[in-house]
Length: 67
Image (cartoon, rainbow, N blue to C red; front, side, top):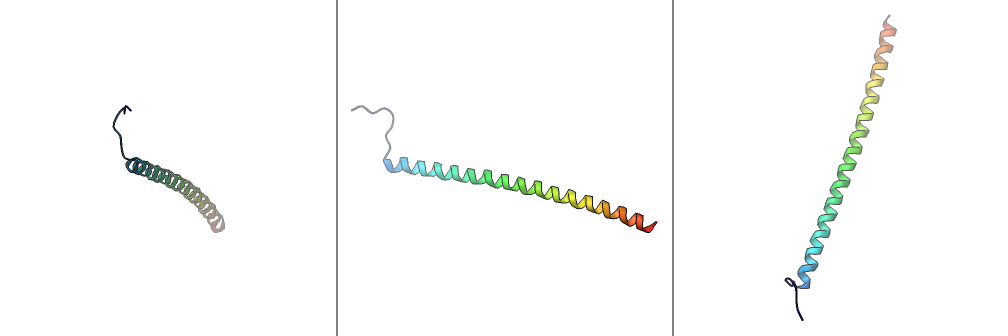
């Protein structure tokens, strides 16, 4: 029987597959965390814009009331 390339014990190959799987899962979790953070930032910016608009509206009412 002829072998091409190096041969590795099955335990080593399984160990490498487990490391790759964990790395892939970690990467996926990182991507998900980034997407959640971006969504939260977008939500925060919408809330800030809404508050700024409400403040401008209230300032206008105060000016009109003081006239």
